[in-house]
Structure formats: C-alpha cells, structure tokens
Image (cartoon, rainbow, N blue to C red):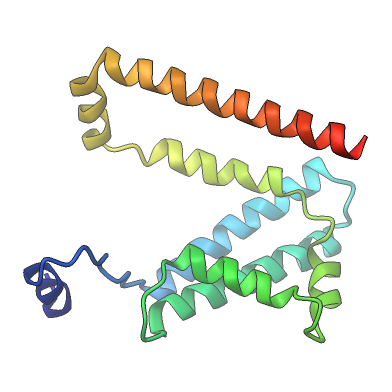
Length: 167
C-alpha cells in the first residue's frame, strides 16, 4: 500500500486509490483492440479501409490522451472519465478542430466496437465474482430479474414519451 493510500485509509476517508497506469502496456493493448475494432468496422459497415483506419486512429488518439491524463494529472479522475472528457472537448462546437474530429469518427459503428469490450468483460470474470454468486444464490437471481425488468420498462416509458412528444 502506498503512503498516499495509507494516509487516506487512516484518516477514515472513502477516497479511491489513484490508478497507476503503466502506459506502454496500456497503449499496446489499446492498439490491439483498435486493430480488432478496425477489422470489425470493415465487416459491418461500408467504410473504406482507409476511412475506417482514420476513424479508429482518431479514437485511439482520444483514448491514449485520456490514459496519459489519468496517469499524470495531479488530481484523480478515473481513466474512463478523462477519455470521455477529452472526447467531449475534442468535439465541442467552439473548438476549431471539431469538424475534423467529427468527420473522422462519424461513420464508425460504435455497436461493433462494443464486441471486443464485452468479450473481455466475459473473460475477465474471476473466481471471486463466482464465489459471490454462489454465496448469494437465488436472491441474486430475483434482484437481477427486478433490475432488468425495471430497466426495460423504464426505457420503454422514456422511449414512448419521447416518441409521443416528437411524433
């Protein structure tokens, strides 16, 4: 435990430990996922290989920039927050490069990009999560059913409301 984390723990603070991102392995893994994402773009869209490569390179740049910010900025935000903020900042209408960034990524199919992420999430289930499911038993199943049903019904109500307003 680092002295920073130990000091936060002794003070009774609920502060999250700062991510210590190893940049080179993270950027290498991100490049691998980008290559997989590029090949998926070629399979599911009508994009040219060069346009798909440019779009994936743009997304890689935003993600790499977010990882660098998460590693070196003196205050803590999770890397996913930095990546999101950087993506938002890159496409704000008041910045001079917003149209260039939007043109790069406008045809990228983000649903196809979720495939490698979901595959990794499925492979990353550890024995600790399996033990939690075993200990929780049927109670976890009941809660999962209520959560999924509530999410589905809530989404249907919101979609119906929006369609009635706009239609």
